[in-house]
Length: 597
Image (cartoon, rainbow, N blue to C red; front, side):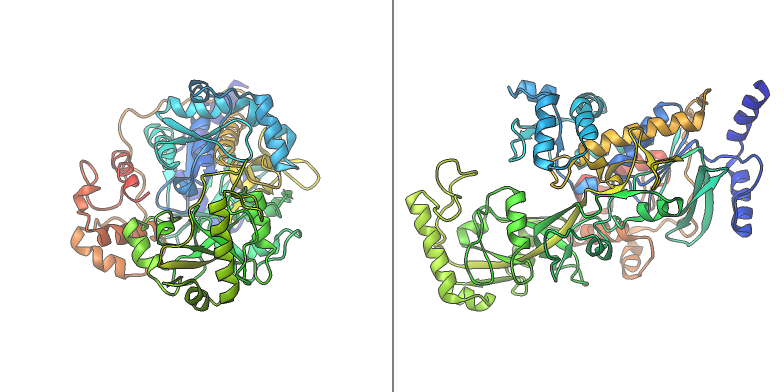
């Protein structure tokens, strides 16, 4: 037994170059290499979003060496664009006088979701304070605000001082400071390896160079996000309760393609609730997207919503449960128009991309006739938008009358018990009409996992060594049929931590191998083609080229070029212009994230 334990330690400590040599041989042979194998890590986490970061940190805390692999060149995933966290019985709630409890939250989750997974909903209600709120605040996350939402009987929608990026950055910073976590960017996992019936690693492809290699580990955690960026997959699994819209915009991350579902499929993985999807109905085509397929989240509390007949059809300020179904059942096409005036234009909010600003919204959206119709009279506006002029004029007059009387007898938007502030009449020209479309957003179904986050097969058997967390699991069914406010980020952290902890236990066995963090800084291998550092004079030429695997670089540098930002604003200290490779460079790089997000 002592000899076996010693052998395991020696195998785990073999050099990376030895593992790479064996990996190349395995690729050439097209099969796994027999006999003892060196491991590149104890745990491999696929996907560096908020669930993956949580899994990596928890696995490292349990003593594991972790490889965190992501297709993007930076970590953070879609969470950097997200909002807040649903959290239960926190110190901030108590400070504000909100009396919450796991029992109250559990009842709220089950009532709103309608068919939520009771075990996971109860687990999140009981553990979100300690396992999410206190864990994040211990890393420096500062929650500052709680919003009330229609689905909660107690306010519990927590926000940092800004978007969720302020919760994600401390996770990335902590991961970079941990010596046993290595980030492998620009890398797509093309397959999962299995040896003797147990998951043993992954096959990868470098998205920039096309280079292939194997990474070996004792367990793999899938945190690849949902499938709402894959329009074909969304349509294939569209819920039967509503007709699929002819035009469906993409509002999810471009990396949320369902890759985790595909990776687990060869192992006979089970899937559940794939038709449970969060579809936003207020998507505006992104004017900077040449494909016309991506959407921007558009909101205006001053507007009225009208259908193709020019008439209101719902309470515009009702919950998403009400308004979403009302729009999706519109004929034809599940589309609608929002109508507002010059005063209401000041309340327009557009989110979903980094280039948006007050000036950009005015220049590229409000004053863009391809997206927004504008006129000094309602009949002329109706004609420009292709709506019946008489009907729209009467709709606006009727709504203005409701505002003056203080009572909306059609849909209850105004009057006793109405949600939100009382609107103002639509009278001040110019008048605006924006046509909005359904937009994909979040997955509430995916891989089936057990209560230890191990992926299950079709017969309910565990796929040993394979774990999953976050949106690739539909956040474990916590949301049921209706996504709640903040019930994606919080459950992603919880399931990520559970998956990382359990994967580390499996990989390390009875005698966890605790390798002390290196005292000196280590450099991550530079992908071929990245060795030459490009100075600022090369930036225009770099942006003009179509370079595979440089999506984030192109988006961020086009934006700073447009704004006239100096290179030294972001590239400072140890991070000279060029890729952030060493830990110190990546830590400095984090300070620049909030300039765009």
